[in-house]
Image 1 (cartoon, chains in turn yellow, purple):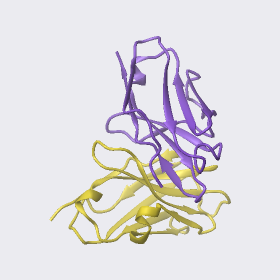
Image 2 (tube, chains in turn green, orange; image 1 turned 120 degrees about the vertical axis):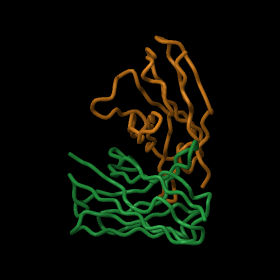
Image 3 (cartoon, chains in turn brown, blue; image 1 turned 60 degrees about the horizontal axis):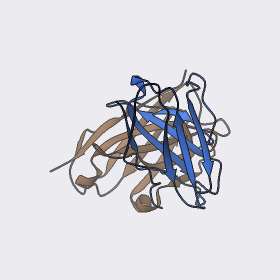
Image 4 (cartoon, chains in turn blue, red; image 1 turned 45 degrees about the vertical axis):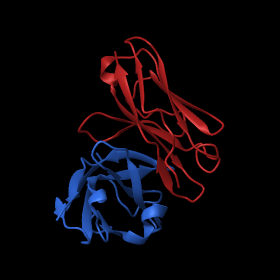
Length: 119
Length: 110
């Protein structure tokens, strides 16, 4: 059974760096073809894909946010970490991590974690 | 990359069929058979309903179907039920080897 869970601060100040951790079980990021992605959703707004890391450590980022994002994995601990620099109130959102399957398919999602950016 | 274009809302009565469109470009929807659809109920995480344009994951009702024509993908829900009321999002693989979501469509069951 695949499960994912996001963790991190619920409140960050403008200009700070956000660090979110996705802890997963039921699969290994050492397995060929596997990936973990991050997606966010501002309150009342649409989903936005942020980043994706593959089993071979290949990384992909949303072009408009690429300069602010870093995604890394720790396969021994079954976790993926996303950092986003220079946080702004517009970055207030629920952040989800998800298991990637096939091409561009997120078949299992975490419950999401709400991050508020405010001074 | 720009978000895929979806209608903000659609509605239908129980038992009817509705279709939600998702328009992109030849660099995403029109260029690959890698379109997915997600259902999201309020306060919940998205749920995969369709992948690779027209495939249903195990456990998803066969009332849900997907297709594409040119740069537009479509999700059709037949035999509409009250529980189908939710937000629906399309997504696509892109030529930049990234992903893009649509703006979302709110489905109301009248």
